[in-house]
Length: 336
Image 1 (spheres, one colour):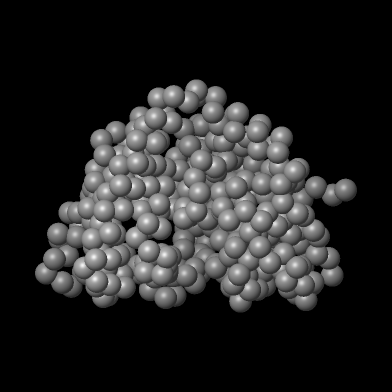
Image 2 (cartoon, rainbow, N blue to C red):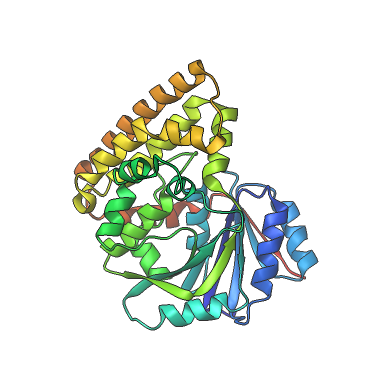
């Protein structure tokens, strides 16, 4: 059986078939063809199989049935065959030269673990700093944002990525793949993985020649989900975000505490700015309290993990994932 050089993994809930179709068409149009496509989905495997067949694209559908994007992605990584692995969200669209140029960038340096590209959002920037650039409190917003761990990451020159990235398989496995100690809602899992890849001794490169279009405003989407699901859901999101940065206190230092402070105090206000309306004093009070609770819990979880877990944790996690991957989820193949 032919072993492809690249495994393209699409990580999805399986719900938005319009986005997935747009991505699959852009994959089919790639000028580099030595790849396999794995759709790692939480649901809707039958319709995704039909979609791949209708597009004339050979796909492996891995339907996990678990509502957890970290576990879903990890199972696909373990089952993939390529030496290089592309991790893609389902709401992006690739240029025809995306894969060939990303491979070229990655192979220019021997110890490069991953390569990231330029992401363009046709819907506009979600950054509150950008959106308040012409307002009086712009500099206040910028000052508050320095509390976030992202500021420390940028200052230290660390490279991070979101899920439009091409990585060496060995780099993902040595880093321990995605953290599975979190349950949905999950945020910052990609930052955590990028930091661990660099801790494992690999570089993360940026390929400025390549662009992808990203069609979802995630921050706004999470704000709407909070209004729908309630303050407790937001508290869990804050907890996971704080935890995934707090794990790296050895690298980020005091920034994990300022990040926890930002999540506890300022994220409720950021949410209100996103939706541009106050959902009610009672709702906002609960939102504020759950943000504080989530931030404190996430900080403690992250610090405890570092103090109590052996450094071989990445290897152990990958070995356990391999052991149980065959018994989780359902795999089917869509061939035209």
